Image (tube, rainbow, N blue to C red):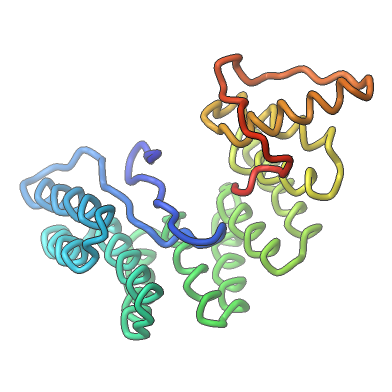
Length: 256
């Protein structure tokens, strides 16, 4: 589970590629007893969620909100938990509550990337894809110096079979942040799928140089390098030698 240095962890995916409804832990240093108690409730809620105890997890996240109502993390965590149960058990009311909580999270943090992602997924799952596009486009307009909105737009565009538009969003994201490993991997995967293997290899290698903990990407780099060697093309790995390279799949990495 990767962490945000000041706020939260990335969500745990437990669904198709685009579905990132999940949970974060607030790991930032908290000041005051209520903040510490809120953090502890979030940590306990995540543990319960990961064990499949969703109702108990939701109870802990409600406690976190009560103890620190200004923090976006409790709202995100509770939204993600209700999103999970709403989808898993077909509970429309849970999904409605989750949507409200995602919005409350964004009121407290207008650049909460995980929250935008979760809300966009929920809107798409409830047959409101245009609303999801509107949400992400609004975020992108309001945060022109952030690569994250463009990466999420690329996800949604690819899901809508608009591959070239998705590539364009990722190129724009890399113009803003040339070292963004997620954008590099995503662009590499799209180019890989379209048959542009050498450009894909270059993207994958750059991504691994930024984040070497991507075994699927490292495995695909090894495959592409082997194919390049067989055809006489030059391809030099950037990934460290210790990176796992044992996967046998011939497909590009499946996730951003």
